[in-house]
Length: 150
Image (cartoon, rainbow, N blue to C red; front, side, top):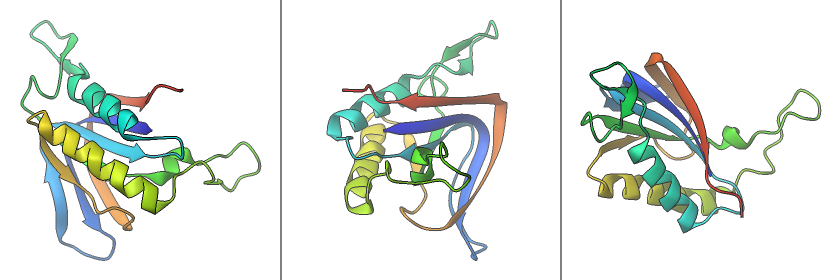
């Protein structure tokens, strides 16, 4: 399981072709989440805990020492199968490593539920929908997290 995590001042997601905002957050984390074939509930739990505790917000001394929980921020989670795009051959990405929707969606939903269990305010995109994501990256701070290999 992969999560591209961005520290944001704000983020919002709309469905393509619709002016209506589906979800939005203020200061916090924007998480693009990808699922591969080998992922399971343990991966979702490990990654949700890692995101919740990730210390990427500045403390009083200006060091990245506070988590999204510490600042009482929010999280916007957007499904992103393209995190498993493979471009090693040619210029068109292949997505063989991305899990099929029937496997990926339950793990995506589990990841979201586990984040909510930590007490965080969690907003989401719509799984498998064509979306537009707008955000103001703060820093910029962007990290790629990956659940442990087995």
